[in-house]
Length: 250
Image (cartoon, rainbow, N blue to C red; front, side, top):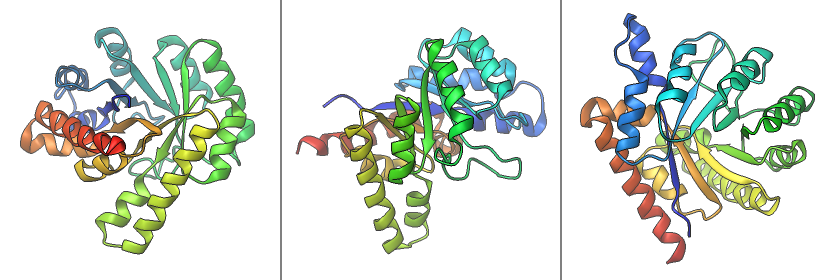
């Protein structure tokens, strides 16, 4: 069984910086620390409102880190042009609303097929690995395959929220949906990633799904870094994921 990859999202280092302005703390420095501590790639979401990551952050990340950059983006002309200029390793298409605190739910790939299809084609044509950030509903996964996106990232937020809030029955339902979705996606030839709301416990659990090859985690790691330091939180997360991965072969 292949080692499960960890992508660290540095958006909320930029959130802290932007709360006061200036250059500190620097998300690029955070990315380098996370890489040195053992992560496999860096994720950054350039929102249209630039509330955290900024254009120069993306340019510096691409130029200065020695691991893959996963560029989270809305499926808009502006963001496509930035991706084509920057040429990140990967582009993850995500939904985006101005009123949300963070990304809420997955893309509606079925309803947005006409908008997503040309974006997927254009990014793929330039050699950028495209993923769609979607819920685990079968119709969404099947549409991702139909659109030609080679990767999906399953939105795990509903499952994580249900666990945190003690909604046991709902958590079980959401977990089953994730399991079934990962199996369906793999059967369709899609590479399966997962992310949103994951902590040490949920990351260890989802690492036991053999179809999942990458987790992208940000807010929890940056929050824990306030207390433990970013290198330590990345190491703790890596250890949790490795424990979960071992269960695949047990």
